Length: 114
Length: 249
Image (tube, rainbow over all chains, first blue to last red):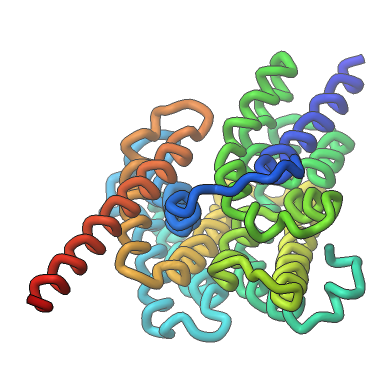
């Protein structure tokens, strides 16, 4: 019985993914977003990403991590500098990941930093 | 949709694949971590595989897993997932102008597959929705290609994570590669001064409101950034107009 409810729960979660991602275009009804809102939304993607990343970098288990021994700050900084150095050309996101991990893993696993 | 020939034979499809491929290792690392987390939190392999295949939303899965394992009421699990996913509602408002010309089932299917990075790269590549059919075909093909590789690498990695859950200690911190992928994509979005300001505001607000439940700090960050950046833009435009008028006199 428990298993049955787990499956119902997971099906519901899948439906929630569908509904939230298609929320404003499920209906065919004609309406348009006001022009100012459409223009404002150009700032949404970068704000959303940084809102996800910044707490992941600076905090751990809902607590601030002491910044000088926080390996993730150095890794993110290194990745960003790599991106700027490469001027954002080519497979630069891949480079950002590799370069960042190259900084992160020794500090994290070697020195035991956060 | 990636299985429609008009899409996968279109050159924009490959562009979409290429754009996301750079971030794919990060997506894979993050997906693998979610796979590991599901099993290590005590979900059965069947449930974990079913969740991976159907739910396809990392952060809402991560929020739902402990609730599901603890046997929380269904509506609590669903409400949590809905709130964690609220940012997608904002994204859908943005995507609406692009997608309304598509048939409904294609629209819904494409939306279901459009996770954060695909949305971000799509609206970066196509800053304004095209009005003609040729442009719309290209948009559709690009999104299909981008979503396809994103979906495939996520699925592969997440299923691998489920299979290897007992061999990958979570304290290695491999999931951090996912954060670094987002760092790279964020850098690629910071193309104007206002967008860099939006990035800064988003990060600060997300930390200030970190104690809000259900990841509502992210929604708060989006709302504040959009509102403030629009205001800054308006003030700046007004200033430019005044300077122009003064110079004209």
